Length: 243
Image 1 (cartoon, one colour):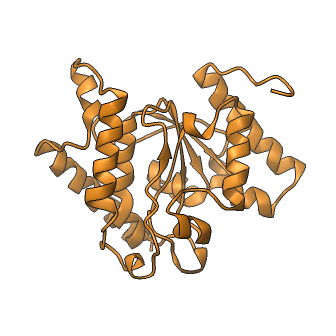
Image 2: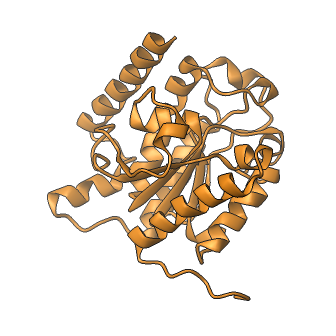
Image 3: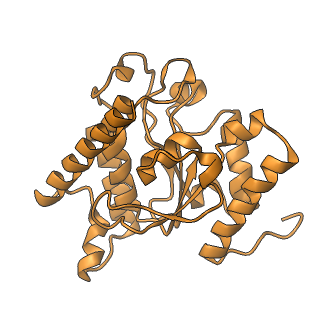
């Protein structure tokens, strides 16, 4: 299974590299590497909308398309400094077409607010854009089918920090088999997935759904410690009580 995941992710990376060589319109911030002016907020928003409409909404790359109600692309600021990446949509997300709107989403919103931000200040998405049956973790084939959609989103937004929520997101983004328990709380660098992304700081932390299942002071303290590291990297001050 691990070998299949490696092969699938390599295939997705090759697809992205080919599209980049052919001059893909979906990577406006890659031009910043050449010294050109970075894409504007309006350009990023337009490119994200085109990616969703033309590539994701009607996607049939894997079997998950047969059982979905809606694809769940992502939402938030196209110019966000921080992107939160989860594993995949749940039942409520599939119904609404929005990411993280169930109980785990409510907790993620509180996490973002604890950082002194609002949901509209950050960008929230998942590795896969369709709900797996029973909310199971995505398999390697499903991850590979959707992976270049995620990479394009990250290229367009070009965040300063990525927060990887849980095991599937962390392992997919970092191309690793190491589990979240060993990775969380330790800064990692994004590998060379595509132009403009290599070296982007990644903070792995527990998924909000896991926190809800293991709602202990220890688990909550670890997640808050991870978020504080992100805040320090972004130069954010903790909000005052009552704010």
